[in-house]
Image (cartoon, rainbow, N blue to C red; front, side, top):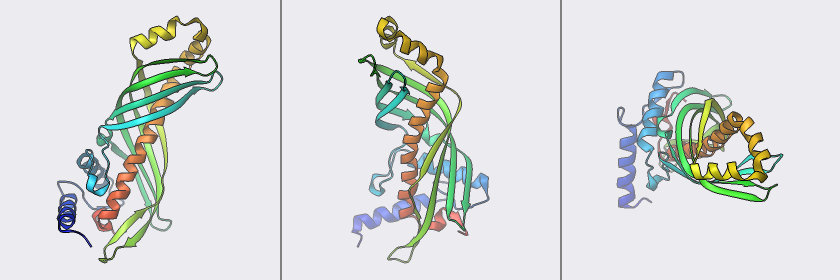
Length: 243
């Protein structure tokens, strides 16, 4: 049973989420414009998180760590930490499909991100590591695919139940990657890693886009988590009509 405080929080949360111009608008699954606007409102209003309901902050989002293989031949890795990600609250809905027979959902959004954090460039073949900082700017399409079911709670309210997701990323254009000047100097002056450096430079566009997408895919796990957490609180009719 909900405590008095919990009941007040629940009522307040549902009221805010369901105010048409404030948070979330129920849409027909074929009404693309309604879905786009509702998605943007939801992302903007939940960007700072709602801890009482396990809705996590997405803008800014802090990604504690990410290990990214740059070049397998030379064993070059980027070890990233404390990544501060800005831009997820401004995602633009690119595609939404829901199959009522198979209960399959595909959600795709376009996102423009600005990312800053710490990096250690490690060459396992050379046995050397170079610490510094990194900034990344880029755009991508993030796609989440998942299935849903319905679950009726003990109050008779039916909710969406979101299954585990599959997330993919497609870069748009070329990601802009900048390393801090001191790190660049260290990488340029070490004669033992120049073969690795030249190889990586020749694949810079692909490497930058792969790194951006690795971050996007990690970040979208939290985006889908927030959809799942909200579905546990809100009735299914708060999201979509006629499903």
